[in-house]
Every structure is written in C-alpha cells, then in structure tokens.
Image 1 (tube, helix red, strand yellow):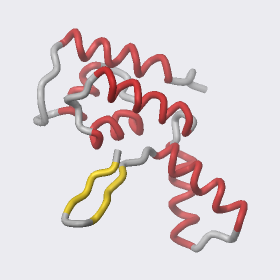
Image 2 (cartoon, one colour; image 1 turned 120 degrees about the vertical axis):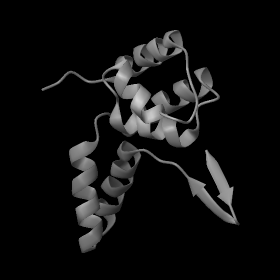
Image 3 (cartoon, helix red, strand yellow; image 1 turned 120 degrees about the horizontal axis):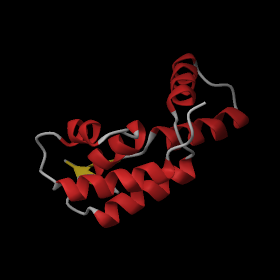
Image 4 (spheres, one colour; image 1 turned 90 degrees about the vertical axis):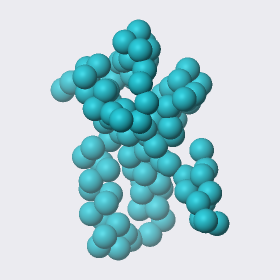
Length: 116
C-alpha cells in the first residue's frame, strides 16, 4: 500500500522484503557501511521469507480491512506469539473482538516457522 502525505509517497514494507532488496543489491555492488549494518539487522530479524511476508500481509489486509497498513506491517515483522502480544501492537488504535484476535493469530501461526 502506498500512502501520500504532503506530496511524499510512503510505502510500508516488511523486514523480510528489505532483506530481499539487500540480497539483490549486494549481488550487484558493494554495500556502503550503513547499508551493511541494515543488511545485517534484517538478516538477523527476518522471521519469514519476503514471499511469505507479502502473502501474510495480503491475507491480513483482506480479512481485517480496518487494521492500518502500518500495524499489519508491524505484525508481519514481529509475528506475535500470543493474543496479548497482538494487543500490544494494536493498542489504542482500535479494538478487535477476542474472536477476531484469535482468528488473526491463526492466520499468523500458519506462516510462523518452527523454532530452531
């Protein structure tokens, strides 16, 4: 989703998608110092693949249209493990019913990888 604020387009992307971008860029050229730091960070904190992140974001956006894209991006980045974790991400923005939160967790859990 692209949001325009005062003429500036803002697109929310997930950590796995940033990793995918850096994977491609690092094949083409040497990364700058700050880019290397960012690349190291996203490699460490990517919990799912970029493709899985896109699918999860799409599924959550379609099922929960009242949830802001920024919150969905945070959910995909964090992959909360409990309803309470999910509530923290969504805090003060709007309220979902317990049933909706449980359904959201079921969708998230489909994409979660086994812990190593």
